[in-house]
Image 1: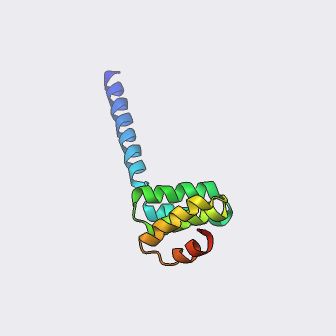
Image 2 (image 1 turned 180 degrees about the horizontal axis):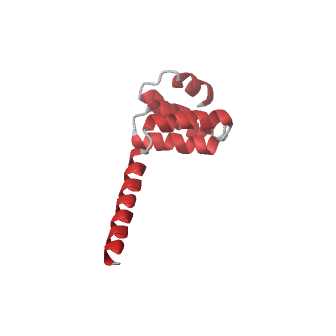
Image 3 (image 1 turned 30 degrees about the horizontal axis):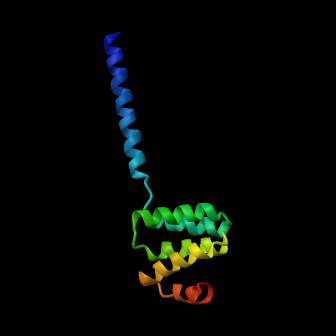
Length: 108
């Protein structure tokens, strides 16, 4: 009986280790979050898109495409031009030149 108990505990520890290793391997990259955010934006899921773009920015604070797209989600999905302009300005500062067109059009 003791052998069976030790074997069972060892098996459970191994399974726990494998599950945690699998979870770590499944973490998304900034690009993954950006792509999922674009997909959510296209589907009209603006809050989810903003969360994905924000996560991409958290992983890579200089991700100009994430700032640009989050700005689009704020402007065109959430009607929040103040936050959109802030994100577009950050995207432009990071070198995303198309952001300047939106800044000139919406951020006055």
